[in-house]
Length: 400
View 1 (cartoon, rainbow, N blue to C red):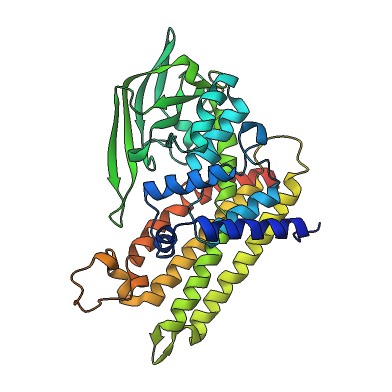
View 2: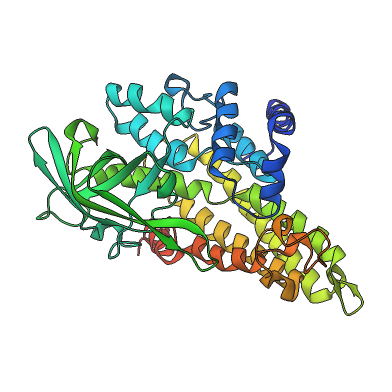
């Protein structure tokens, strides 16, 4: 198995890197370097630039509006975005709902939704998790009853990321309550302006508004918005989650974080010397780099073997990528906290703090790091907790 990139792939990397350097707004890049999420306007602006270049949906085939790239090209593109850093195409549109519609949707659904997803004319969100159905997603209770040419939906979704921005939501609903857990579930598309939908914010531990509760009270969804067959939505869900977990390796993002960590550790003093000269700290940085290199090689192996797979079932190896990818990201946040020390607890935006003649409380890079650390605890939970991923691996690899 040759895991080296070809000359063509190396040239493609340069093309992507040059495009990002030319087109990515400095304000967006600086915000992301500081560890902050890009604003909605920044995400929309960047995705439309990518769409104009034909790069808004790396995983999509050409006939659906994608570039028709190989798996290696997709990996290179994703890595370059994360290392810049630049916003990735909105995952709910491009990596989740879009591929499901491409795989299971009707021709009418493809024509209606896919072009608007690409250009981010519609911002989508994911209605999967419920108060009693998180990692045990098949335990969902939100009910959809068919009445003529529409479904009537009642129930609640939670941890709905960026629902406050969303124009549409794709959701799993139970259409046959008498069926077994994984059966009797359907996949629906719903306009967020439909009467009966209520979005309530959930403020996370660092004070941010990223996730929400979404309530459905007699919400009418046209039957034509059913994706795939009624009661077969679990097939759509498994397909979607396999795509989601592959992207959670985030090798490029972790590489950028480690690079930033090294710069910070050279500038931060500990006992009269740079923190990077502390043997224990340097050992931990090295351990992360080794773990990241092993993860990168695993991603490359998945890419190499994926081209030979004849079925379209999710590769259980994506569970490995999800576990190690999120663990490495959390390790990075821990070392950034250590480098910042007490300054990590200084919150807010350094560009908006007080008057120009105020004494600096902390270096700009340290602002909000405690919030990032606590917020990133979620990474090993969402997309199927790491405990669930280990169960998947035990079943798939060990036959347990």
